[in-house]
Length: 80
Ligand SMILES: [Zn+2]
Image (cartoon, rainbow, N blue to C red):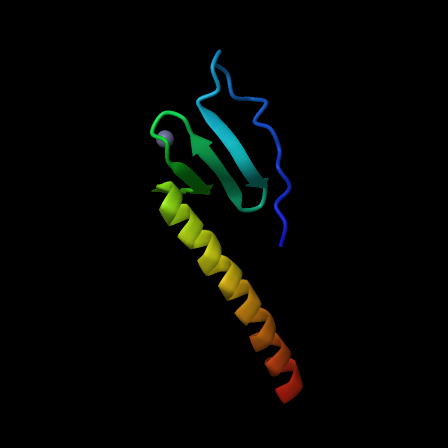
């Protein structure tokens, strides 16, 4: 899965307090925050804030889940 980076053009302010890492319009956005030095994940009404280590763990978790999902989906097709 790829989330192409996109700039937050609508964000105002002289100094960028947050660096957008990825936006998926149908889902939400992930950005690095200079204010609290955490990673923010915004999915609709859900807003999650995590430190760098937590974010890296989340990335590993999702990558592992994605890989296992492929295996699971393959097995589902084979069983049918
Ligand atoms: Zn913040």
